[in-house]
Every structure is written in structure tokens, then in C-alpha cells.
Amino acid sequence: MIVNAYKSELMKNPNITLRDCRIVISKNLGIGQRTVSNVISEYNTKKTVTSPCKTRQKKTYKDLYDDLQLNTIRRHVHSFWFNKTIPTLDKILTVIKNDDSLPNISRSNLHNLLKFMDFVYTKRSRNSALIEKDKIILWRRRYLQNIKKYREEGRHLYYLDETWVNAGDCTSKTWVDNTIKSYRHAFLQGLTTGSQNPSGKGKRLIVLHIGSEDGFVPGGLLCFRAKKTNTDYHEEMNGNTFFKWMEYIDSKRTVSL
Image (cartoon, rainbow, N blue to C red):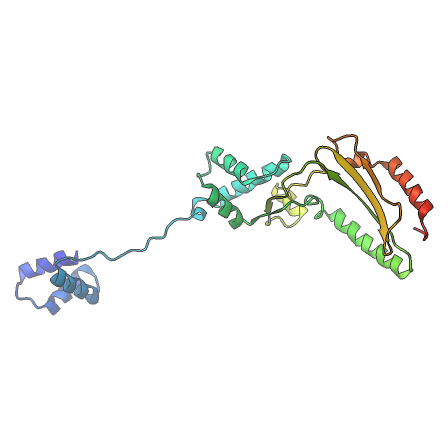
């Protein structure tokens, strides 16, 4: 554009000075005199002008989705937890591709997008759906108050716990939504607090033991093979089993429980 204006002015007035030509072109085109001078100088030297480089902002995976679509993706992830399944990256990608309201995205960009949305790929928590409930918080406070009281009274405290050991295995890591701060927050948003670890798969052993600051109680280990493999192990660690075990422990104690 500047070169064409320069040629036009030279045709009108071949004797025009470069300074006057620069002023006229700058005024007519609304372009600074320095820019006009540089372009004319380059043209007179090289007989051509290079176009200035324009840096274009490349769109990233973040630009593909608006807030509504990001919320749709979040709900897709939580739908796995609602259905008691683990949301792997491949499963999430399949759901997104099958949703016509969402743009296509590559697997690597989906991984980055989930992190951008504050999802974290971490180890699964067995208590993910429980630890944030208000009643659990109250129970924990009451427990700490009672423990403090018993210690002040000089009582000898015993601790017991039960667990399971199974022959199967499951994925130890999954996607976790870090934007969910509490059970109530998840409930109000219509979302979940994540997936719980199953109590076990396949054949399993149920283990129960008791101990204190002096160590495990001798003979206190209870270990037996579960008869059922398709139910929660708590069904087999029932009141009768626990009561018989507790009677045995009581007969072995050296300090009052």
C-alpha cells in the first residue's frame, strides 16, 4: 500500500523530494512517517518489500471449551463414580467423543485439560465418600475427647482393628476432583466425592488383632478365610464372631481392657 502510494506520487510529480513525498503519504494513509520512510527506503534498495511478521496466538486445548462444556466434562467424570466405576482417561475420552455437544480432543490434551480443571490423578481413598460427612467429623471429635479423658485417668488403652487380604487386585490410582471440598459441596453440586475402594475381590482372608503401648496382645490374632467373595467382609465379621473373640481376649488379658 505504501509502495503503491509512493509510485503514484512520483508519477504525479517526478521532482518531489523524498521528505515531501513521505509527509504526503503519511497524511493520506494515516501511517507514521517513520514507517513510510523505512518502507520506501527498503523498496528503493531491494526493489521489494517484506511483509512484517505477525505473531498469531495459537489456540490451545483450553480454548476449545467454554464454561458450560467444562461443566459437562466434569459431570461425565462424576457419572463414573455415581455408577461405582473407575474413571480412567480412556473411558473419559470415549464418553467425550460420544457426546456431540463437545469438541473432539486428543488423549494427551484431555489429560492436560483434566489437570487444568483441578482433577488430580492420585491413589484411591477407601473413605473418599465418608471422611467429609459431618457425622464422621463429630465422631472423630468425640473420640479424641474421650481418649484425652481416659489418658488423664491413667487407663491402659487397647486398640483393635480389622482388615482383609484378598487374592485380587484393583487400580490403585484414579482421577480425583480437587474442586470438591466437602460432602455437602458435592451434594449441592449434584456431584460425588469420588470412588471408594472396594472391600476386596476374589478369595480373601479376614484379619483382626488388638494391641496397646506394650505391643500386640499374645494370641490376639484372629485370621480366617471368608466363605463369601461377592459381599462386603463385614457381613462375616459379625457380632457372634466378634463376641467369641473378645471373650478369648478377655481371658488372656493381664491388664483390664
